[in-house]
Image (cartoon, rainbow, N blue to C red):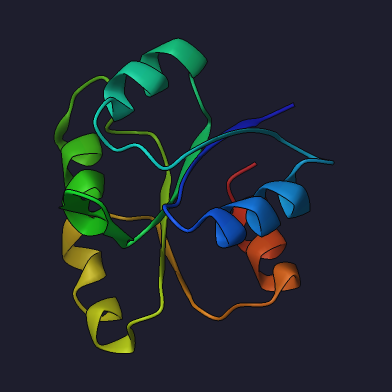
Length: 116
């Protein structure tokens, strides 16, 4: 079963996403951005799914850090954002896919499945 690291600071959204993915994936969910590389090293996810607006750092910058680290550069990253104006700049961070909020769960599952 594939592992997904879910980084989302909104507990309700995190819970909905976690529940939607739980039947097909092992989901490691967190709202803490301070030790992302430790979580990646510990859990070895196959995919990172993160919100754009996060405490202390935006998801784009965090994605850029993941993509420019030689140990994690090939790790697929999907960014979720409720701010359409931000979506156009997300490609420059190196993310592999973007989901615009609100999204339906079918779209979430389809997007995640592209990286199986």
